[in-house]
Image 1: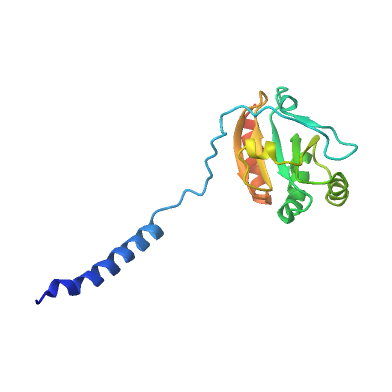
Image 2: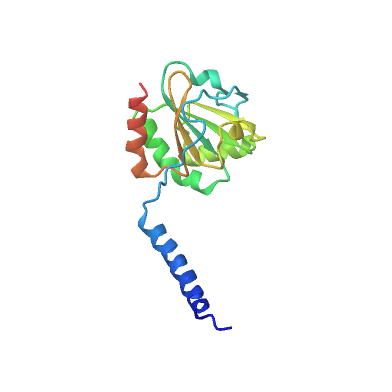
Length: 176
């Protein structure tokens, strides 16, 4: 049995895989994460203060008519430390920022705030990560743009870098 067409099968497989590779390189990627929470109200929660001397946080605190950022962070998170100067810059620009500390001890949150500053208006403690999961957050740090009536408008995954500050300010201005 002579089947010369069988010799073409490996070449066809290689050409198919090569075509997939070229397609993957040529088609632009959508690097924006599309959260299912965008456009929805914040879930109901009432968190205790993350450390003495800060105000606790609830979803109703973020529905007072003022758009703001909600930052999810942890004292043990290295990128959270790296974004601290950008959060201070946002605060200096007049941005209100609330925060949720994830799986943190009060003394660790206090040490973090002493070392890196406190740009936050309120900080709730989410020791069980229940609110973080309700928000659809996959890790720390993450930052949400919240409208004045408590609607999630935008989700920024990862640390805020200097180039992200103007974009976040614009999103907050658009929320007014």
